[in-house]
Amino acid sequence: MSRYSWQRFSSFYRFNPSPRTFQKRDLASRSETLNEVMPAGSLKTYRKKRNLQHTPEPKGDGKKAGEKKPIFVIQKHAARQLHYDFRLQVRRALKSWAVPKGPSLNPSDKRMAAEVEDHPLGYAKFEGVIPKGEYGAGTVMVWDKGTYRNVTKKDNKKVPITKALKRGHVAVWLNGKKIKGGYALSRIAKGKKPRWLLVKMKDEKADARRKPTKSETKSALTGRTMQKIEKEEE
Ligand code: MN
Image 1 (cartoon, rainbow, N blue to C red):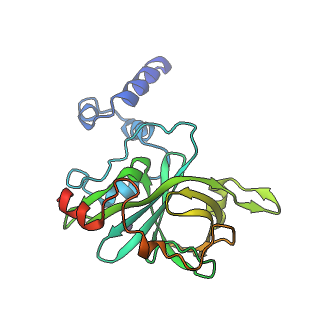
Image 2 (cartoon, helix red, strand yellow):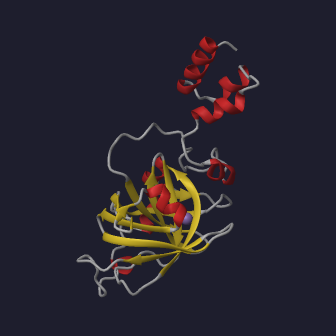
């Protein structure tokens, strides 16, 4: 393919990423083209695990994020085992951890956080019910949301978020509705299922008495309880 037609081809698909189009005009470079349309980051696992025709979860084909502050979201997820999914925007994906007990405001609590697959950016707005039989079946609530700042430092120098994640030491300042202040994420086990600890940093937002996962049970997005989401979405 000449350089000129390749450019036309790729820009065509960038704006017409429908699977039908791919079938009709299949080419040897199909996988390359798919990579072009796919958001940056690794949403492959996310898509592989779900049948996106059978679940209301986002497909992950959202538009490019602007230059705005990165977002974070904490989703309360009543799957087989209740947990809180803690997600940080890194470019166009959400780095994700499943935290069984959710975040604490007490700096002496160490909350286990199991690293899970990246989710598409649009997932931050997902609240609803994943149908029975589907991956992660159960009710999902946007328990908290807001923006965050990467405050990771090493030797008094700022560390970019991608590097911090790779190294396994991340510090973020959260600016949510329920959760504010510094949190440290430290990887304690590598491998196929990396494990981290999520710990509140000692700052003016720390509060050993407040237990937001117990006392604040409504959606930061819609004000609904888990029961109401379940009732309305099923
Ligand atoms: Mn989950």
